[in-house]
Each structure stands twice: as C-alpha cells, then as structure tokens.
Image (tube, rainbow, N blue to C red; front, side, top):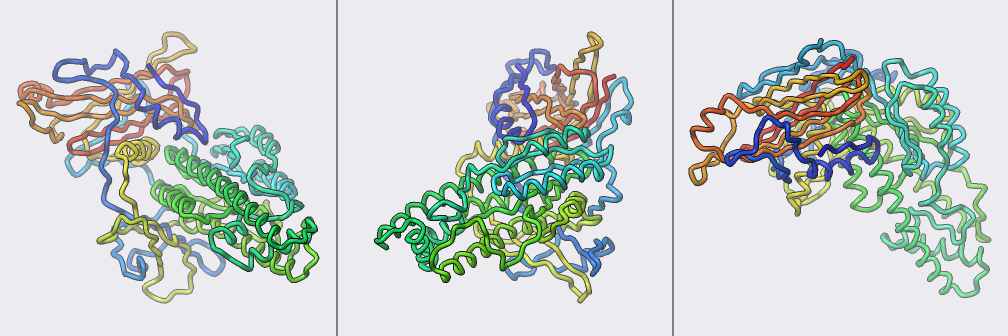
Length: 577
C-alpha cells in the first residue's frame, strides 16, 4: 500500500502517523525470511547532544549586512555565563554554498545517481518564499492596503526562479508553491479578515485577550476596575458588583478564545517552517500581521520551538506589521468609550501595551532566525520588498550548554562583540531548556519528521542512493528509489546466537516546486546468523517504487538503525521526460 498526501500547512500533521501505516510493497529486494523480515514498526530514536543554534545578523549604520567577521569577533553568553562557540558558519544568500558529498567519519558515503539520465538536468528553484497572512488578527481596513501592496510586490519583486506560496492563519485560503504570478495575486485578493478568535470594538464590555490575561492570570486590579467602569457605563448598570462579575465572566471567555487564536496562528507558522525545511535553496517565511500575543507557557514554548527549528534548517522568518503607520497617542474612533475620561485614558494605555507586545513576537521571530521586521510605515510595498529578501550574510553560532537541566526553564542569550565596533547586532534572544519527554513514540514521530523534512545530508551510515525510472506509456512513469546499505558498520546486538538490529528506511518524493508527492517507510528486522551476516556484509538493497507522471522530482532518503542509532540522509533529483 502506498500513502499519498497533499502538501500544505497540514502536511506534517498528516504525514507523521501516515508513515507508520505504510506497508512495504512486495517488490522490495529484501525478501521476508526467518532471518530478515520487512514490516511496519514505530521506531524509537534517542535524542542527540543538545546544540543551541544562534543566527546573527550584523549591519552597519546604513543597514547593510556585514559578512567579513570571524568566530573570534563574537562573545556569547547563556544566562550571563560565557559559552564556547563550538560551531561557526556564514550563510551567504548572494553566493549559496554548493552541496558537497563528503565522506563521513566512519568512511560512509552517500552517492546520488540517476541511472540512465543526466544528474544536472533537474533544474530546481533558487528561492522559496512563503507569505503567511494573519487574517485572524488583521483588521479589514488594514487588509485592503495589504492586498494592494502584496499584489504589486508579487508582480514586480518575484523572479522567474522564485517559488511562492500563500498561507493564512485561519487556514481558509492557501496556495502551494508556484511561479504563477496570476494565481498568487488572485489568491491574495481572496483573503478576508476573519474574526473567529476576536471580538468587535462595539461589544460591551470590550475586553481584549491582553486585558483578559491581565484580569484573570495577572490579577491586575486596575485592569479589572477599568473594565468594570466601562461595563457600568455602556450597559447602564447600577450595581458595581454585578458589573464586576460580568467582567470576570467575559474575561475568562475572551482568555480562552485568545489562547486558541494564538495556538492556531503558531501551529500554522510551525507547519509552514517544517514544510519549507525540505526545500533546496534559500527559504524565507514572511508574516504579514499586526502581531499576536504569547501570554502562556504553551505559546512561549511553541514560539521558541519555531525559532529553534527555523534556525536549524536555515529558514529565515521576517515580519511586516500590517497596521502601517501608527502612533502611541492614537485613539480607536470605533470604540464606544465610557463616561469616565480617566477610564478611557487607562484603557488606551493598555491598548498601547497590547500593540507593543503583539509586534514584539514578530521582532523576536525575525531576530532569532536572521530575518527583518518592518513596522510603523505606510509604505507596505517597500516593506514587503525588504522582508522578502533574506539578509546577504547570516552568521550561525552554535554551542552546547554544559550541565543543561531538562527542566523547561528559559535561558536568556546575549551576543556581543569581543572588541567595540560601530556595528549593530541582531541575534536570537533566548531558548527554553528541553523537558523530559513522557512518551517515546512522540520522540520517534518528531525525529522522523525532522529528518525527512530536512535538506541536510547525514553520513553516519554507509548508504548509496540510486534512482531509476521506466515509462510504460507516455503519460505515466514508475520511479524506483534504491537504498544500498552496507551492513559492516552496523552495531548488531548478539542474542541467542543471532545478530540483531532493525533498519528504518524512508523514501520521499517531492515535485520540482518542493511539494510532497508520496512517501514509503519500511522497517527491516534482522536476526542474522553469523554466516548470513558474513554473506550480506557487502550490503542489502531496499527498493521503493512510486507511480508518477513525467516531470522533475526531488528524492529524499533517510535510513536509521536501532542499535547504533546512526542515521544517513541523502537528496537526489531526477528528470523524467
């Protein structure tokens, strides 16, 4: 049986459980036998050593990115404790590094070949841009200006080699990666403000998610008093206690709605980043939003997880404040107000605090991934042109915290120069320490997703990747992915006179735009006698076949063994005329 999933925002949520349901086709070269059986299983992988990645962008006074600094120019601290920078690299968007195929430490190599065809014939896009429109939080009036700027931006800014996609935080409007500018513009025009997780300024009492958090979670008596006075005024209530109880009930309801809205927005962004991790070339996520609030531990962890994943996969996240130009003294004319001027002044003060906190998450996502945050300007076209272009140079600093406790605590990071320089640093602000996972199956799912939807190649296991195809007719083709695994480097466990280990082999096919086509997972359970192991020491071949149409495809292969917990990952490309 073969599983075919549609790509998009929900791709990964559907893909992880789908992998465990895939049955190897009967044509696999590894034949079921008493010593070797091919079947489905839920593998469990152990976590790697903690490595914290910190993207850093350095700009001069004119805003130009600087790319001539070295590791010795930076000093990094974790909770004010100096850290050893164990990993240092420079990502240049103007001169992308060519993919290498180097040998691993144990002599493992990954070969990418397309039998019977030219490897260079598959030309892939150079840049992927995912535009995430926050229709849950952006006001209808602001969306009109966003539409105009985005449509013009697509027409003038995107290159023929670019692929762009449209997502919305509500999930109601989406368009997968394409180079078709007309489709992109038509999709943008369909986006409308969605108020499923927000109220209206004319409701009474008018309690925002920010105010609800202040009242319910922070026990802010001033906020409670402000909303109580507003309820008395707009509802003409005589009993202050009744007004207070109404405010508390409304605040609890708005808190729940606001938390769900943030959860949905972050989930959308997380899935977009995961989806883009599998794509070659430069990857940029552009969030068009007034911002949203992360006021509880769940949303804070989700935000940090997004930054961590994007930093690890070299996905840049940039933000555009959809509100355009605004000032701290602006009052919302649509709000009914109260009969008490002091209440209105305090209410608008809370609104300004909320707006600042909303924008701060966009700035933090940009800082943590090497992106750009554009705000407080009505020139939204210039803003989109700026944020859709990744900085020319991004430094990636990595360190392994010593004695890191898995307690989920927040660690504040600071990056500075070792010597005083007239330059500006933009860097990740912090991270959460990991928590001890309760369910090993959840660990397995997460690590499978990370490996499959990453573009990085791993060489811990000796694996060769080959692709073949044949066309039974002009309109159809059969693509075969061959994984040749050398068994000499596996760490078999000796049990009852047998050599035991399991191999998990995952083959995934994407189209030329990076959209997921199909995936097959096989688990090879080996309990080999000594003479059988000797005979097979040169390797076994696992074959996976896909029914496809003629075209250009990207192939991703991931192999993992249970005993040694070593992994190999390789990328390939194939043109089927």
